[in-house]
Each structure stands twice: as C-alpha cells, then as structure tokens.
Image (cartoon, rainbow, N blue to C red; front, side):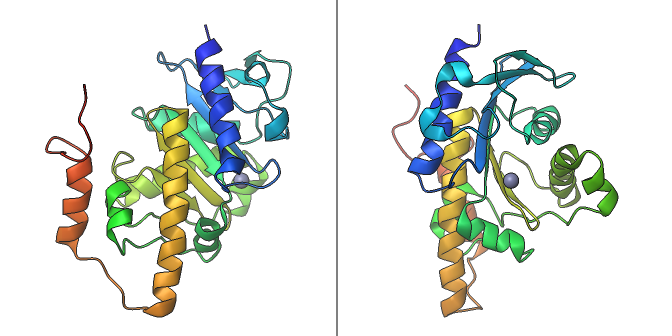
Length: 233
Ligand SMILES: [Zn+2]
C-alpha cells in the first residue's frame, strides 16, 4: 500500500545532496498518504547513497508510532506531523540546512522578495519564525518547531499555498508542496532565491521589488488566471 510513496520519498531524499541542499545526513523529506493517516519519511542518520525505498519508515499520524520499516524514523518526524495536521493542503515536506537560506535563519531575517524568480514561487517574503523558548526546546523540541512555524503563518496571515516554505530561527528550512518531489523543488527554489537575495543586498541594501511585479509573476504561474507553461492536459 505504501510502495509508490516509499519510492517517491526515497528518490526525493536522494535529490537533496544532488541539488547541493544537504551535506552528510542533514535533511529529510516526507510525504503523507492521501487519507492523511500515515506519513512516509527518511530513516534517521542514514546516508543518502545507501538508502533504498524499503528503508523508508511509515509513521502513524495520530500517535507517531512506526508501523512499517526496520529503522528509526527521522528525529524531525514530529515537526512533519504537526505541519501535515495544521496545513491540510500540504502533501510533502522537505527539511534542509541549505547554506544561504540558513544564513538568513541564523540572522533571524526573512528572505525579502527582491526579484521575479522569487515572485514565481513565493508570493512575498519567506518568513523567519521567532526563536523557541527554553521550555519549548527542553520538552517536545521537534513538535514545538512545527508549532512555531504554524504560529508564524497564522500571526502574519500568510497562506502556506502562497509561501511554500519557512525559515526556522537559528536552524534551517522547511519547505512543502503537493508531494515529496514538489517539496524538494520548493526547498531548492528557496535556497536559490536566498542566495540571490544575499548577493543583491550586498550590492544594494535598498533593493526592493514592486508589489505589482510580485503579483504579476506569482499570478501568471499560480491560481485561476495562470498562463505560464503548457497548461494541464
Ligand atoms: Zn534541522
């Protein structure tokens, strides 16, 4: 029942080092089942080259129990579960410490929308969460990481559809999409726009993107009036 998702999640995880988004074992991708009762996630601490679809771990959403797989699930699993519960439109999640995006996270700064590449994928700045309190870190750290992401989107009235990624303060990136592979794509886009923004701000701290260009680029790829690409067959 989980075979197709395991293959997609394994492939998506292997994409992370290939895209230069992670070193060693620092990152993970998951996908939730269509009924949203289970998620399939990378095993903890396993090298990407050595992974096969059968190593992927199936976790029950309701209690976090492993129901299939011989290895331990990624330690970040409770963050993934919290995001799937609170963002019902999300089907896949990627976590990385990609360098340029993580530089923004460590500086506690959102990635501002400065150009059209950013606007093609993110309809505004990519927010950075607040830092976690000691009590949130000492007990249920990974769960609270998910919670602070949800809090950031609620407080700033941001739709996870329009901004498919976030910076967790002093930590790294979570990005999402309709499935595992799209979440990797968005994590990669986030890293590229973060690197470009960093270089742009180095050249000109006052650089800004007009709202009408942001809206134009976002809306020609997304939503009802989209006309970019070849359309749905
Ligand atoms: Zn991490």
